[in-house]
Length: 301
Length: 261
Image 1 (tube, rainbow over the protein chains, first blue to last red):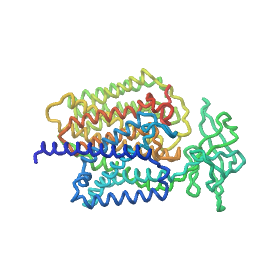
Image 2: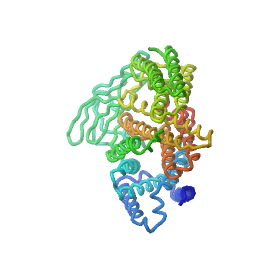
Image 3: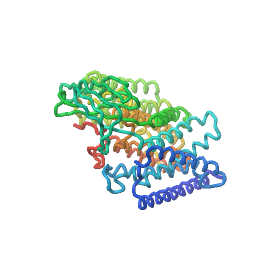
């Protein structure tokens, strides 16, 4: 085939991809109308691991049937990548232009992360990414490593970040100086007991000469239900790690400054974090490879 | 070092870079390097002086990031020149650098010493410097794309090759910036990605450069489309860098808005 014919063929193949993306979008729109926005809170453990298992099986099945089913074979190639990235780009752009709101019952486009077409288009892109990755793994050679690092890294990071999100706990705990506190509130305003108590010994603020805050820090002890204890200073950018929780300095009574009677902490537990980090570090290594090995050779004079 | 002295460092630097660009047209490579590096050294001396006198990395305000941008544009120009020996690249990079220097001279922003606690992190400098380097390279790639679209004829293989190389390296740095940002956000705010408007536009920009990369591999002959994708990506990059400060969807919501004025 001549280069020109090949170009035409590929262009046609990308256009088919745009149409396929339209189908994915329409499917999402149907789901949105029928069931409402994506119920992310229902995807907490163990639903998320089941969804991941189904997704991975689906990808494996598509890969095994690639020789028989044209659509699956098509999805392993760059044309599919171009089409799906374009769709994801378009929808993410809408998200960037429409103010995103947290409250319930807002227009679909104001809650893009729960908008089925957005979620399905990104999922479709990830499936294409995973299939391309399997394709390269199946004919593994050392020079495939950069490709695999980039594509597998993206898949692991995004899949684990998204599916793990409902399992993440983010609690706010307000503790008064010289007191300890067991109760915290969730983002939705529910009072819960995370099983850790924070005792605030001292809270302090330092200022710059121009009056803006330079550093605020809380001197705390943490007690857990099973009797263990930890001690430390928590300040912005310096969290304290206790029994799977990370305790962040979050706020204080800024009208009182250094005399604030209390300190507010953010407690975060994210069981999927290590897997997201695996993905992120693969992407970092992949980016290094992108620059060193994947860039086309310069044309010498 | 104070911002008042910027012109006394920046203008000699631009003169040096312009001299470098001139000798590039003349084909006198050793003079090109001598002048270009002299310019970089003078300019960097100012950055260093600001860094020391502010007692923090000068990376916080819009003006400070523009200052780095001028530096990295000139640096990217000389790197590209050393690798591909383009006669015109240094003229372009010097001109672009000069434009950003003029903006900083016309609209100097207040550079106070204070650095809010969230920015006091070892991640701060690498996050922003890596991003500025990516912006510099991708800006230069955009210039090549614009040049190709205007010229439109002849053998474009060399231009395409240089454009691809700059995007590959630029995208790698863009990814470093984004991922360093994610790791930092986890340390500072408790989560690595919150779809803050700046993050959303960073994702859009990143996707657009990914699109360029994939498209170039699939349709190497369709270079005009590729150039258009690159121009679009650069618009997104500007949106991410400063455009969101003026976007209703981001106002007051982003933790990333620069301290303007």
